[in-house]
Every structure is written in C-alpha cells, then in structure tokens.
Length: 173
Image 1 (cartoon, rainbow, N blue to C red):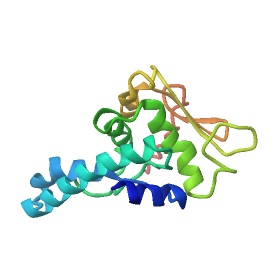
Image 2: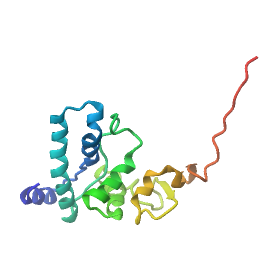
Image 3: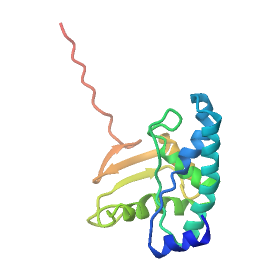
C-alpha cells in the first residue's frame, strides 16, 4: 500500500480485515496439502505486502479488524487465536491492539458496535477469563486448558469453572 492509497482509505474511513494468517498457514502447511509452488509463492507475496500494509494502516489510525479464511485443512476452524498471536509476533501489533481490533473495531466494522464489541451494560457479551496475562502472553488464548471460564449472557458455558455436561446413557434391554 502506498501513501496515496493509505490517505484515501483514511479519508473515506474504509475498514480493513487483512486475513494474513491464512497466507501464513498456506505457506507453511500448503506443501503438505499439495498446493503448487506457484500458489505458495503468491501467498508469500500477499503476506509480505500485507504485513507492511496492515501495520501502516494501524499506525496511521485506520480501522483494522481480525478474521480470515478458515475451514481449510491447513487453516481449520477453531484455530482463530493463532491469528492474534501471529499479528503480535510477526506483524508488530501489541497484544492490546490486536484484542481491540478483534473486538471493539470488529464490531464497528460490522455496524454492531451498539450491541457488541465492548463490555458495557446493555450489550451482548461473551467473556473469556484466562489463567494468565494475555497482554504479556497473547498465545495464552491458543491454550484452552488456560480457559478458566467462558461466559455467555452471564452464564458460564465452558472452561475450568463450567459444570460438567450431563451425560445420560440409556441401556436397552
């Protein structure tokens, strides 16, 4: 992204969701899944330019959200926290910046900031309580054994504090 494109993006308040972890996963795991080298090279080119552009947009005050392409063998659903770690370790965001992009800014981009994205009275919220300081170690979000509680609408649904899910086994005669 050159400065002219950045200026236009900022003037028009155009949000960006870079989805760069998909590129990283495609480069690292694509060969194992049979991606041709030409495709992997394309992902590398996109990643190289995207990392520089994402950091430039964020530092200039642009709106960035987190999210990407998931559901592939090399980038399965459920690995979303890896994207947050990637943006901290390899792109240069701080842990707080990446969390704000994933929550507050993401809700603004979707036009849902009156309903979600921050912890405020009257808003819907899923709350994750983690054993450790994610501002010091963002990768804690990748380790589900560190999840003390996942709360939805004030009810603990998962994590160490969650009640075991009752299993009823019916024996047929």
